[in-house]
Every structure is written in C-alpha cells, then in structure tokens.
Length: 515
Image (tube, rainbow, N blue to C red; front, side):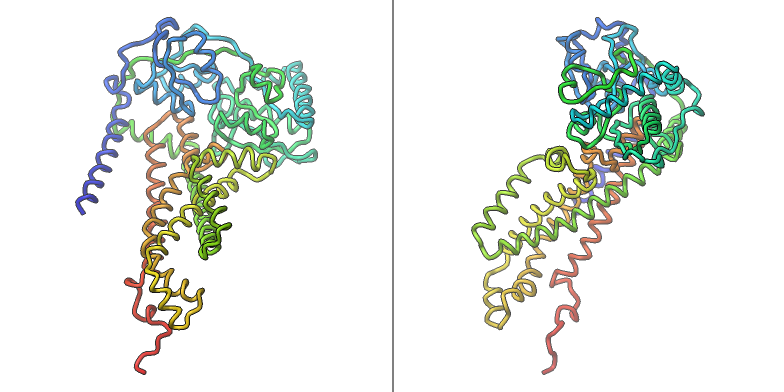
C-alpha cells in the first residue's frame, strides 16, 4: 500500500512538473537564452543537434570540427532541445526553417549558409527503378520548361493556404500499376499532414507524375532515416522527402534530376518571447493539438493501429509460445535445442533491430506491409516470453501432482491440462500481465518500419504544431489507458484460472456430490 501511494505521488509530481513547464514555456526564464548567436563562428565549440538520416552531420563537422553533436529523430525533437537549452543550434534546409519561424517566433536562422544542395527523388537500383527514374526525369524536364514546377513552388512556399490542396490521389486509375511513395510526412513545406492527409511539394510533384503516366499512388509516411532503406530494399517504388543528392547515397539508389536547389542554414534561439496568460496559452496549445484540422483523428487512428498490433501479437504470441512448449515438454533434445536457440536469438537483440531485419531483409522483396511485419516481430518476442513463463510455472508445480493424476487414471494430456496447467497459471499470470504492458509500450518503435502508430502520430502532430506538451501527454495518457484496459481483461482471466478464486460450482464441476 505504501509503495502504491508513493507511486501516485510520483505520478502527480511528474504531471505537475509538465503542467508548469507548459505554462511557463514562453517565459524567458524557463529556457537558457543567455546567449543569442549572430554568426556561424560563434558556434565553433558549441553543442549542435543533428536529425538522424540526414547529411547535416557531415556538412556541420567540416565547418565545426570541435563542436559536440547530439542526434534526434525529428524536427520537433530538435526544436524542443533548442528551446530548452539542450543544444545551441541545429542545421536544416532553409525553406524548412522559414516555415518553422512563421509558427515558432522563438527560432531564428543565421544569414550565412553552410552549403548549397540539390533535392532529388530516389529510385531503386534495378531495371524497373531505372526505367521509372527515366520517366520521372522526362516529366521533370517537361514541367521545368512549361513553368509548372515554378507554379508548384509558388503554391507550397506561398502564404495562401487555399491553394495548398491535392487531388484525391487514392482514386487515380492505375492503368500502369500503383506506385508507393516513401516520405517523412513531417517536413513542411515539402511533405506534411493537413486534414489527416499527407500533402506538400513532394507529394504534389508525385501526384502530377502519376496522373500523367497512368499510375496509381500510395503514400507511406516513415522516419527520414527509413526512406532510403525502403527504396533500396524495394519496399517503396520511389521516395521524395527533401532528400539531398550525394555521391554516397547514389551508390545505393538512383537519383532523379534535381527538382529543388537551396542551402543549409543554422537555426538558433530567437531570444525572448513575451509571456501571455498561462490558461490562454494552454487553451491555444490544446486547440492546435486536437481541434485544428481535426487532429484528434490522427490520435484515434494511431490508437487503433497500436491496439491492433498489440492484441494480434498477444493472441498469436500466446498460441505460438504454448504450442512450442507442448512440443518441448516431453524433453525432446532436438526440439529443445531449436527452441532455445531461437529464444536466445530473439531475446538477444533489441526489438527495433529485429523489426528492421524482418522488414528490410527477411521480407525485403515481399509486399507485406509494415503493420503485418510488426505483428510477426512482436509475436516472436511475446512467444519467447510465454515459453519461458510456462516453463517456470510448470516447474513450480510439484511433480507429485502429475504422479497422483496418473494413479487416478488420468492420461498425460488430462493430467497436464486439468491438474498441472491450472496450478502453474497461478505462478505465471502475473508475469503474463506485465509482458502485455511491456508489449504495448514496445510498439512505440514501429514508426521505424513505416507504421503510423500512436507514437508516430504524436510526432506528426508535433511537427505541425511545434508543441511538445499536449501531444506527448496525450500519447502518454493513451498508453496508460490501453495498458489499464488490457491488464484488467487479463486480470479477469487470472481469476478464472486460479483455483483459489474460482467459484465452488466451477471448481467442483464433474465431481458427484452426496454419493
């Protein structure tokens, strides 16, 4: 009881701290803004943030060999680290920072550029990929000559939001097949979510290409560091996500001709921002996170995906672990050797690595989507845990129970299922419930293989609102609720299998009374 009370107090303290952080996030005293940088030379030995999957680390290291680097997965993570003083600056593409500055006045960019770059779409290094690349280059030449490309740039870099709309590309007639486009989905103005759909310059260009050449189009949102891998392994037909053309990348994929040229700039803190009323500020953050553009639907979609992966993995993992235990129960040496090796292999690597191996290598040439691969990966990890729980639970039951059952005329199957297993369940059901909670939390990594789960949707919302408090808290609360519901359900099952908690009629079923 004492530990539970302390846990509640700790949770209240954490939530209170986050609330105070949100209320005071615009206060100059809440972040380290003692130093406002005005030139690149001032960053020579500072801490610089880098987005994983980009070439900014190479560019920055050449200019600042004595700087310290910290790596982050997305732009919202970089912005949060910048505003809280964890980093002093971060490099990014100039168009991206200009859009960010419109939304977040606490960020500014230095005038001097680190370098210039060209963006291109990427295609697989296969015969089909080269043919598709050549068609796209032909399309690019045409839109450059007739001014369409300039028109596209004006739309997505302009301030008129009414022009930033796309055709319903999901219903394009796929006379020449359907192409899968890999994109980050959180890289405005090139690609981002609006009204629960991915739009932007990159997607607009892909739509026009597919419509002209008779392709259907399917857009997959994924982490920036996964886009190139998806194309290289054939999981996507092409990718466009503000991808810089480099000789090193060209060894793995085919680049199109450049469709955009720009420069890399350094984003730094923009100084103090006047603090407003805390309650008003909280309401504005809440509105941007959940109400504007119906973003609450993104969270709901993420919850459905997370629950689906979790429930299917629990069902299949339990079945696989149980069947494997029955296979090994009699002590077959061959069966136990194979099972122990597989468990050692699965439990010996991080789950995110297992998922990436399954997605990019094992099923690399297969059209199996990331969600199905996630279920397969988590089924394997959960089955390994179930096998270990069953083994330890059954070993905890006295062997005399089985011998007594044999003496009463029970078959081996009857002895196990009617005598041993119900007693063993008392020992492992607590661990089983804990494994389900761990599985729900572990699903937060499926964004690495292009699955739009709850965590990924939270990142997408953060990339649009540049808010940290409400998207993160919303994701945390959703995980708490899902874990509570599933563990409550498993708790009901626990009462059903625990002999001490079963009803008398159920416990004595089959026993004749008053003979």
